[in-house]
Image (cartoon, rainbow, N blue to C red):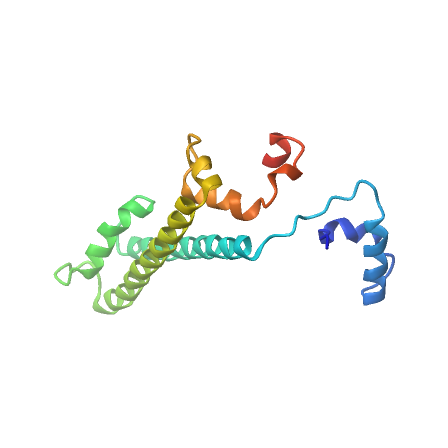
Length: 176
């Protein structure tokens, strides 16, 4: 079995959307000498990719919630620098009942936001532990981690998303 990216088949579609037209376009695309195919991934590679993509989703959600907390607090004159390292200070302000800068209704709502940030942090850490454990078990991933600037997340991404590095002509093609 060989997989063709849909964008490479699109130029061969002659009409509309019927399945017959798609099948004809696929059979035409397969006959081309210079057609590039997508390597088939194993179930383990697909599972690793799901873990990485789930982590990325949670990181994006955490960033959104942190930005919302910062924006809401800035409306009350409480400003903090951007970044996840400064969030702990904001959360402590929200949780401090003696701080009178926040109205009671706002404090109640922002406590929910703070709880969501902390829950997302725990979920991200769990997934990162799974990723690190997977990298420690994989010989190729352990070798990748020895490269300066490459950590467990990057090594796991390369192993999960680039199934056959031999399919690339050079390092430049791999990077692209």
